[in-house]
Image (cartoon, rainbow, N blue to C red; front, side, top):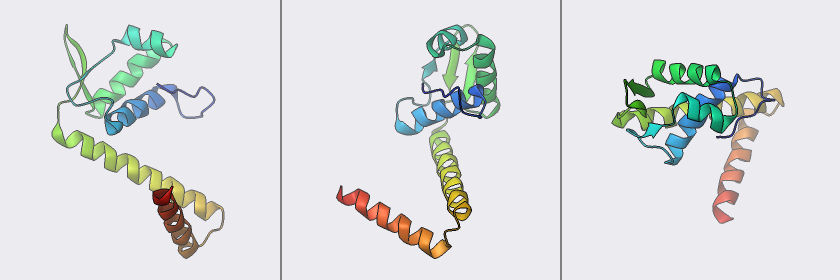
Length: 124
């Protein structure tokens, strides 16, 4: 799990994002058990309260479910992965567009730059 302690985004939200990314990349799958609070805190070298907050947020978002005495699991919902992938892709596109606007790049130029990078990426 890649946490950036210099990032202004709260650590617990970074932890939620990392679980989502792991799902999208196929490193986690619906139904998988995730480490206990104590294990995750030790692995990430953060306070257990931070991990607890991340786990509460994931449960609130419908990403995980906790089964008493068994642990916390990625919710076994077939639509979950599609929803998370779409959410993350939309966020990335919005951030990109905001950055390009902030640089004063016109929409047509942004589109050309994007197309050029996409096609160069296929050739590489």
